[in-house]
Image (tube, rainbow, N blue to C red; front, side, top):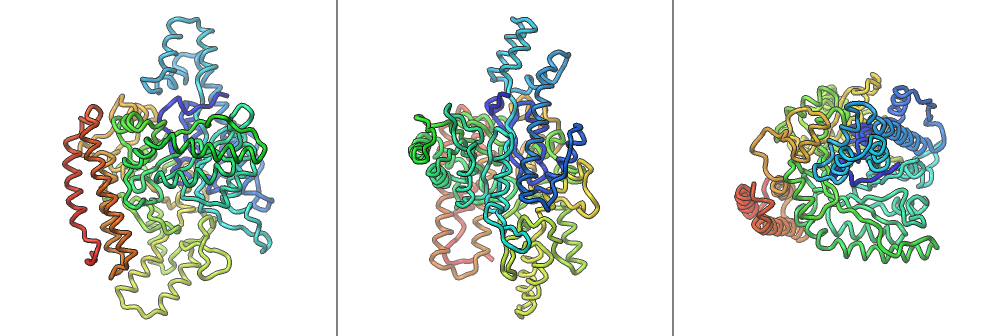
Length: 601
């Protein structure tokens, strides 16, 4: 089955744990690439049972008592998704026999500039039915079923009280589950570098090129800047592993966990990738072929293909096209808006209504993640309500049933999760012994009980939507949309969403949405203000240097945008004036901030 990511010039990134757990089954037959989170093997096992029943496939449960059950569950689920997509794609291609078949929907959703669309129309007018059907089978492609691993979620595991080898760590087992699957697709590595996990890739032949230079399984790095891409790309190349895509994500203007850069903005970062792309490829290629030679493996004389993509805050066809054209990107990620597309993502009715009504103040960076990383959240989500109810009852924290974020060893030999009832009870007891004043006590207490169980909360919607949850699993849903959600206010069909991406319609009713670069810039200015106010005074030299560098980097970004929006007139004229005014206002706000002696409490 032909598999390419060149059919559409957008992709759907991973969202949460359960929101895109089966998205490929819904969009890959139409040539759209998307990603599955590999965090929760328990959820995947439930979804595998559900899909096997739906499509009348045989199902045999994989018990947690089996050896290597996590990897086996992941492999089984990915193989099922692969089969479902293949079957649906075959049915779609054959639908040309029928009037208004799915093949029509496939073609009509393609970008208007698509050569495939143009060739289809040509064949339709100039060739016989049999010739056109043959052409369809040979030329249309399925979307990629990609997977995502948060590299730091690599908890050690035990059996019979004995710690298992690192190959049984959570992320290692997830990698093995993907590597042993039938998928011909990519694994996305997010949340930073994990050298031990990266080295484990060497154990699997599918990540090495065959004698035609083909990679059966590819590596995508999600990065926040060029330096990170270069460091990680070279590390992997030295092991004979090729990075097929660098996926640049905005540090703050995105959903899920927010990995803020040190004031480096998306526009300048993409400019650096644009200008140094060839150097990045050549540098890693030299290291790559030397490693393959040392391993006595086939090595390609010329560099394998490398894609540069971006995501985080894009919301209009104008922005989408500009990113592709100006920065020479291969694809643009559209995540948050797809939470309003029930055909594509798993969002329960109550949460869907919250998303439709969400305004800027309802979308905020929270401290709820047990990983200690700022986390995009939605006010009024049912998991937060559930968490507050437990606090009010005097039993803060969650029953830790999944343990994927059990990484803290402050009080225990085996790691536990800081959102767990066990940890919070111990931590509060310790807090009570410190004799703090009332204000400081409340502040510290809130930091403890703010943490919530996102391992469960980010997967619950998939159980609710497909009606496969149990009472014990609860109904509390955590959701992590990006700030861009404020400008999308209605549920829509897949076709309508794609028409919006390609400029054939406009679903944004508000007229006050700032350009995505301005939105991100505002977030960074506000984030710096927060960091200044949250840093205990007096500032050390190191803290002062960090904050000043942060401010300088934002100022450099502002200067870059001034030049960009003044010189790229043909593509930016539609909103140039408003952007320049907003840039000046944010520059003024930034330069009023004092990062030296005065603390902003």
